[in-house]
Image (cartoon, rainbow, N blue to C red; front, side, top):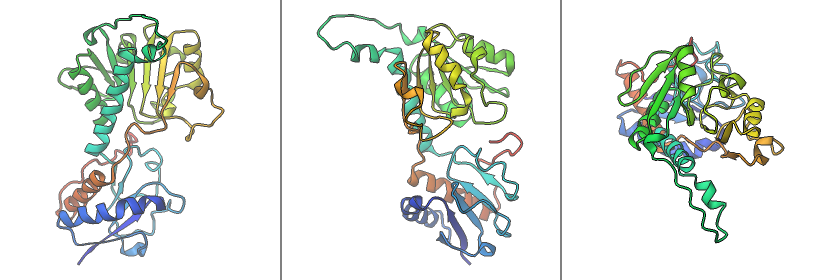
Length: 310
C-alpha cells in the first residue's frame, strides 16, 4: 500500500519539487502517492514550507511526521497543533552554499577587496593584508551550518573561535559557551559570523553592549537570522567606526524595505537572503531518506527540539 505524502508549500515550489521529490522517493524504494491535494485523514507525511492556507495540523490524524523544507523552523515550532514529530532541513547542498557564502565574504573582507575595487583610477596604492593566521574569526552558533563554516575557515588558516549556548567540541576550533564564553568570543573577533537560530534567547543578542566588546574595526557577517542584531545599535557602531563593515543576508523584515538605512549605508553590503538556499534535488533526497527511515521503524533524522526551538 503506498504512503501518502502531502506537499504543503507555496505553489511556486511544487513545480521545483514535484519531479526531484518523486524521483528521490522512488530511488529510496518508497511506493508513494505525492500530491498537493490529499484528504487530511489519509496523509502519512507532510512535506512543509510555511504558506498562507496551512496552519492547523489537527485534521492530519494519521500523519507520522512533518518534514520541513527549511533549516529554520521558528515560524512553525510554536504551532501547538503539530503533535507529530517535526524535522528541519539539514541538506548537504544547503551546508555547502553556506560555506561558500561565509568563506567568500570572509576572504573578501580579510583581503580588503572592496578597497581595491574602489581604487581603480590608476593610482598605485598598495595595502597588504595580514596573513589569515593573524586574523581571528568568531562563529556564533555551532550547529550543522556553524560547525561546517568554522571548520572551513580554519582550513583556510584563520584561528577560529566558536560559541554556542551549550558545550561543543570541534577539532581545530576553540569552543566556548555560556555568557562568559560569549564575551570572550566577541572580544577577539576581527571577523564575526552569526549562524545562530532565532530563539527567545538569541533575539537581539548583538546589541550595543555586545558590539562594544568587539575589537575596533571588526567586520560582521550575518547569514543566520535578522533578529539576532539590534539594527539601530549596529548602525550606530558603523557610523562611529567601531564596526568597519557589515555584510548582511538576513533581516527582520524581508524583502528589506527600500527605505531601510542599510541600503544607503556605505559600510553595509546587502545580499537578498541567498547565502544558503535549499536545493530541490539534494533536499528531496533528505526528505525521502527520512520517510524511508520512518517506514523501516528507524529514528527520524534532524528532529526539532521543541523546548529549544530548533
